[in-house]
Image 1: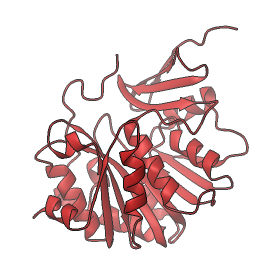
Image 2 (image 1 turned 90 degrees about the vertical axis):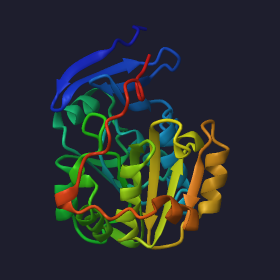
Image 3 (image 1 turned 135 degrees about the vertical axis):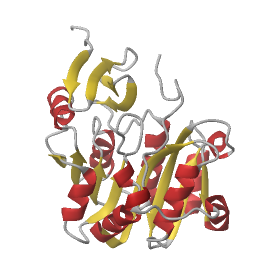
Length: 281
């Protein structure tokens, strides 16, 4: 059997590379301009390699009864790691994936095809434009994992964007976002303030060292109108190979402090990660 070889291709927003994992037979790492974007094991779609994807997975596992099919909207496609996870853990789910990089979506579809029985529709479009045109009350879960390079685009950080997300979600729907920041957490606090102005319930999942300001890192924001099962989420994230903490309630409000919701005219992208923060090798 031939050894898989790396694939490099110019895509709309940089240079994408698919690199085989020497330790897992049909597993691949996707990078864009050297920054890790996704990890996929075609034989084991429930394997989540990156810390933040594992945390998103924990939310997905606890947000509804096990195995219940959900309508999921993904903003940001990458190598479709989470759509594969949902298809495997919640068969019958209907999923839409929106990514502005059509060439990247095409590359992933060619080399890492999604199983034929998975109901995953892929759309090349701007995430906010898609959201604003989408049908109201059409999704159970909305997952935002959109990075232009290594930064969350400014137009996906505002009050108008949060309201558009809330409009698309059903009454008991849940919004999840992968964010990244470091102390003094100006960006993260502004996002908490923005989403707390639209949703009644918020939680934040992050590695304790990040929350203590020791390093730059990812944080998963969870927002909904219904109470979140933070106890179950805390148990799962604490027991993970990459332990994390779930902040909610008064502690999260204290963390948010005096931060204000972000208006479109004031929006900025998330901070540039320090050199090597998300590097590989």
